[in-house]
Image 1 (cartoon, rainbow, N blue to C red):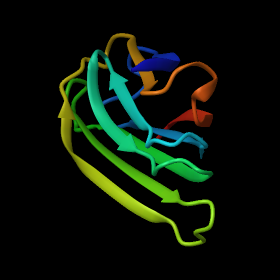
Image 2: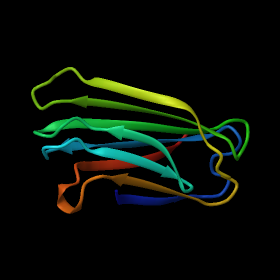
Image 3: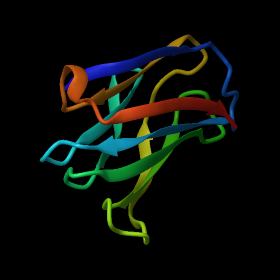
Image 4: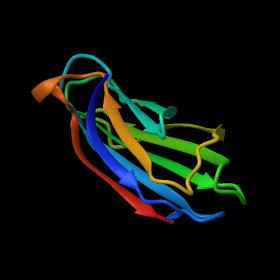
Length: 130
């Protein structure tokens, strides 16, 4: 996997009950599906797989939320995807307790994809505090 984005979540930004919403989107023009992996504090907490290429669009939304503690998180990810000729998106979702990362200290967030160089289908990504 190739890291295409790195950011630091400052200590205590999430508080005991706060969270993050990470959005990643783009167009997969290659022939194969693309896997986007979210790594939070050294743990892979969500994986989303885009559809096969040929102009397929996708948007993955990942939530990481503290559970009344700065060291226990729940995660959920949803992928909306559509082929180039498809007007109805198809989704997949997973969730549950995902990590035990101490958010009272700075935490590194990495976004990784299984593509290399200019073949990366990611057109945008952003992180929001909830």
